[in-house]
Image (cartoon, rainbow, N blue to C red):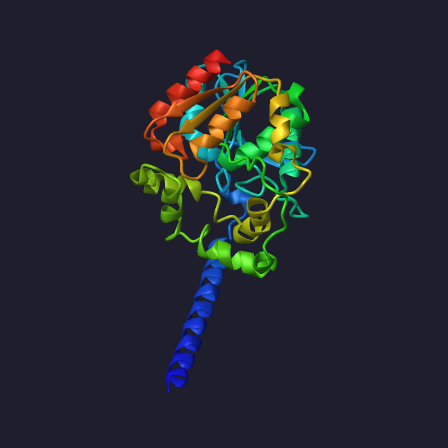
Length: 320
């Protein structure tokens, strides 16, 4: 009797979940119908590089010291807006850009978003702009940023790493088998990252000050999401988040003592995504580096307390 009762109920639950997944994927397809040209913010521009067109939002005097801002995981250039304005007001040339496939930059036709490939995208943009910048990289964006710095250090003046999700010492590993089918990854993405009701909660997960996951920041974060094929593109990128490749220099602990550039680390003391112990290890390992600790802030200090973060950043840049 028990089996006759429980099995049909279990089957109904599975069916309901399957229908929900299908509904979420269809909803994402219906939302993502706007062409990039129709969605581009007025203040930015597309810059042609050897690896495709890159969306760039540059602010501040053209003669100012260039600071190249690399966003984290599913961010884009506009999420740096307050930081870019503060840098511009201090006389720096703030150059935020969209690291493919996020935002408005060209997407890779081969869907190659591995860390070494992303590093080459950064270097191709630097060459196209003909700059030698200070690197400012946050969270997951620090991986490609540091990879680029290790590959071609003479293209950089210095670097500021904010809560860097570098995965130092992680063993190269393939993508978990359940996530290898593209349709599974698309279902996961449409239920989470590109699902509007879920996004405020996902953002809050990375914040110590949960109330800073405001509608304003969520709206900024989702500005590029109506672009055609967003869920599919993020699903193509997802393996980069969940697996590593042996070619990445920046996961090798022995590579960090060889860095020969001024490096400052900025870390929220309450960061649970990349605990501050990781910042302490980097400070102790990279010769001459320093660590600025931000009390009572978490993984995204630039939105948790913009004023505190901007002061720490400007102080760091002044010392560099």
